Length: 57
Image 1 (cartoon, rainbow, N blue to C red):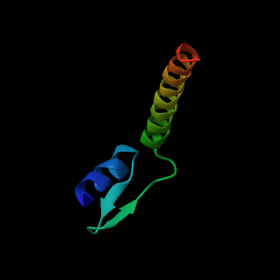
Image 2 (tube, rainbow, N blue to C red):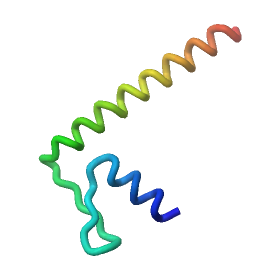
Image 3 (spheres, rainbow, N blue to C red):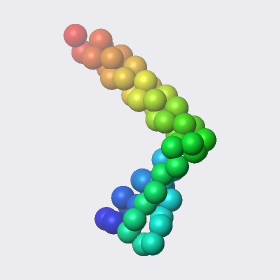
Image 4 (cartoon, rainbow, N blue to C red):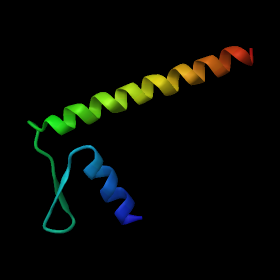
């Protein structure tokens, strides 16, 4: 479970520092890119949910 959480942190730009400590650079371009990608996925999920709800009403 810990490895899965670590991969999640690394996915959004955190970097391992001394084992269990993770650091994030606020100037990281990777962070901004990942935030944009996550916003896009969230918008897609919302659209799918709304479409499914409209079909069931």
